[in-house]
Image 1: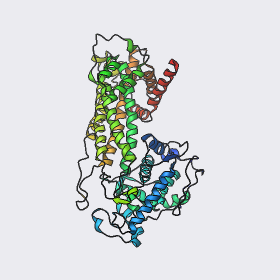
Image 2: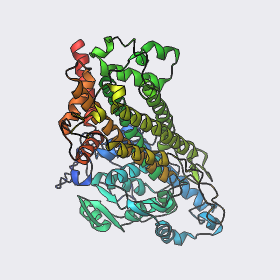
Image 3: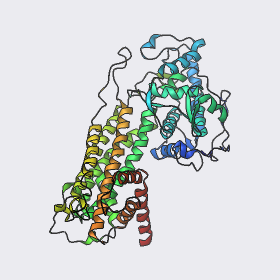
Image 4: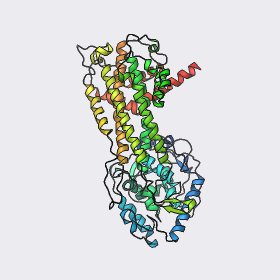
Amino acid sequence: MNKQDGNQINEHDSNQTNESNDNQTDEDDGDQEWGIRASSGPALELDGYSLSIATLEQIALDGRRVSIAPVAVQRVEEAHRVLQVLAAQDVPIYGLNRGVGVNKDMEIQADFFERYNQNLIYSHCAGIGPTASVVKVRAVMAVRLNTLLLGCTGVQPAVVYMYRDMLNAGIHPYLPLRGSVGAGDISLLSHIGLAMIGEGTAQFRGQEVPVAEALAQAGLTAIKPGSKDGLAIVSSNALSSGTGALVLGEAKRLLKTADIIYALSLEAIRGSVSPLDEALYLVHPYEGATESAAFVRDCLQGSELLNADNGDKIQDPLSFRSATHVHGAARETLAYASRLLLIQLNSSDDNPCLLVDEQRIVPSSNFDVTAWTIAFEALGIALSHVSKISCYRTIKLGTPDFTGLPRFLSVDPATSIAFGTIQKTFTSLDAEIRHLSNPSSADYFSLAGDMEDHANNTPFIVGKIAEIIDRLYYILGIEAMHAAQALDLRGPLLIGKGVSAAYAAVRAVVPALTRDRNLTPDIEAMHKLLTGHELLKATKLALVNEERNEG
């Protein structure tokens, strides 16, 4: 990744050995190999309080560099000083001079602190594959860096500098994704800790290399973990929340895409637009449905459908009539989950929690993420509804009694089967989505000598939502293939500006079905189109241009 000039501050600390040169240029341009987009712009400043999902996506997806706000540096330094004062007073502190988990009663001597913290990292490395992509690793590290800046752990400043410098140097540690019960991702985040002490492997400049080699090439020095550093590194929910933030960002784009494809299908069936009437949403003012309907109306601007007389039709099936309400329900749930996750991204989930202003450290259960885990489960259920009605719309598009078009949208039913068998593909994907949407947060064991008798399986739940979204993109892509085919069979029509752009995007990757062919490449091409957000971008651009023309 090409490093960009940034606004990184110049921290001065006697313990800091990893100061990086912001103007340094990396000779290797390995962005695409890393799986992230090319970085641009100045470094994004983290302060512990203002990390957004959009900002996190810039760090993770775009490879943006990070810097630390000066006030946050001061906070970390003061917290470390307070922790040392408390330790000198022989105050029993979990993870510092006392063990962790059921070993909380074991005393740790000061001369054993460094070895104990290394042992804590080693013993907690228990994750299994699959391993996180570079994008996910960056999200996880950025989240943990941000929450450390709140000053509630007391870590030495070198720890937060290491997170920053590894991100900026493009050193992405091996990070397994399975093995956490969701009450602090300790068995997974420990692998990042392993890299910070110079061990294990990492992705660096497009290759998997020993961490020690990557650090040396980047001019960085491994940290020597001191009092409570090990616990602070391994014990947080950064893996769950970091990957969760990426999932929510993708869900937002997915729901916009679902609205566009619904509008495309509505044009294809010459459907009734009465359910989109703005007045309806004034007397039934759910924000999600209102937003969805407004966006669909935008996509349909310029369509002859808006002035069509559908009086004899009265109304369409619910998969068309209720689409904005179902999509809106998912939008509402997404907004709820996002609000709760933003709290997680900008707050301390540490145990014990250091309260610097009060000069005390307090055992806590701030690592409990039940609130937003349940919100994610609700989002999975909402997305299963989005999936189901898309499937029903697609089935309707292939039904001649409903559309007045040939069966399965064949150009010639006597010689072509067309979209008959593909119904099995998208309905089987919907069955998988329905299974994935089943709640799992209550399936936990009592662990650590019955000390840890509650958990949420949060990483698993976040992963399930990601899988639902991926399958939904396939389902929506198949619906779009049907809608475009139906529009072709109907002949020239005046369709909405946004819908026209979406149709063109579909036809750019999947030609009209004039005779039977292998449909798998078409399905994959549509999946790539939607997951690459090209259809969404094309539609938004058309709407922006329309607004400019009207202005």
